[in-house]
Amino acid sequence: MYAQSIIRNAAVYQWPSEQPQIMDVAIDKGLIVAVGDCSQYQAQQNFDATGLVLAPGFIDVHTHDDLEVLRSPHMLSKISQGVTTVIAGNCGISAAPYFQACAPVDPINLLGTKEQLIYPELGDYQRAFTLAAPSVNLAMLVGHTSLRAQVVEDLSQPANPDEIAQMKALLTQAMEQGALGLSTGLAYHNAKGSSIYEVNALAEVIKPFDGIYTTHLRTEFHGILDAMDEAFATAQHADVPLVISHIKCAGKENWGRAPEVLAHLNKQRKHQDIGCDCYPYAASSSTLDLNQVTKETDIFITWSETHPEMAQKNLQEIAAKWQMSLIDAARRLQPAGAVYHCMLEDDVKQFLSYEHSMIGSDGLPCDPHPHPRLWGTFPRVLGHYSHREQTLPLALAIHKMTALPAKQFKLEKRGQIKVGNFADLVLFDPTMVCDQATYSQPHLPAIGIDRVWVNGKLSYAGDADLASVVDYGRAGRFLNRTSKNN
Image (cartoon, rainbow, N blue to C red):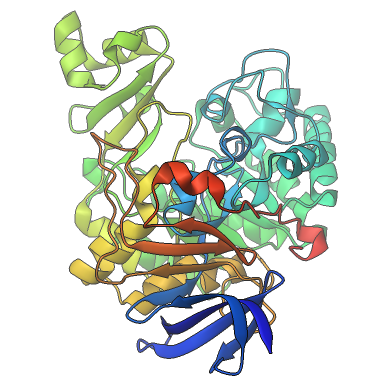
């Protein structure tokens, strides 16, 4: 028998077993066609995976790659980590459906410029995606703030009934065109004024489409439990699954509360379909938020439109130079971006090791000096936290990046190594895999990622110069919910 490619003697982990099975995997026409002993197969390409782990391609459940897949379709920041699928449209901001003649408001400006945000319908975006032919698959959530920015006259206030009706129409059309669900970013200034009635009304729209609701909570600081209750109530009202984005205990007064937060989540999970995602760092990154400016948090400015010369400096250093308070310096820098060192390492470990959390990078590709999570998230979980720190078993780490998110987001025929599934695969060295991206050098690719296949096509080789990756295949697909993920 013939197959296009065979990966031989690979170690494959299938949670909840913590022990790997050694097996061959045969790929043909974009699919996995045989698993186990493939000695009877002949192939054009054979890969000896002795000593290496073969996993399903990693699914980055929390990205802002909406426009990055079009600008930089090789997607080196993700494919070099073993990521084969990204979920875009998080935190209430999506590139589609969105179109406005004016400059995008905060935080939609994290995605790109007015000239790049030109997709009034999700179908328009899908056509652009197909034309760009990115290296990774992508599925899209519809952002609540993106809807608000197009129809709500005063973004500091709740939407009125007519504005809600307009948003529901836009959301319905996007769901009909294959969106996964709705996302909110209620902590941000331009969504904070939303009423529970407004969010509930939009959540109702996604129910008939079997959609999912994801949320950047109204606060991740002291009031986090109340914010979680609001999210629980919205999802329960609409009877849809819920994912809490980048779960964390932000702010020094909140440190050490991970057990309390997880207990609150577990209690509600008995009654609802609830998941969460997290990233493996004790610092967050976003636009510069005046509400997060405190003496207790070390804030690193990554960009500033008004004072670009102050980029890559700490806010405290800038305030001292200007001889003013931290808050006045922050106001003077805006609009700007920042990295906030606002979390406790032990809390990060507890969220990472929680059995029901997924892994999401939350990287900002438009940031000229991004948080290292953009390039390092998945190898950091595998190398630093699983292999070296022993924070969680390797089998569980892989499960959080593959089968769990595929099930949560209903990505059919992905997330598991089995016959008939799409051949999204990553081969890595479990003892060598390691993130290299740092806060000072955030664009460095990981080491230990040997090969990556997307829909059966070899798309990355870790032993090749990054510049040569353009010679590899770009086989990513738009994962349209209504077409059963192609």
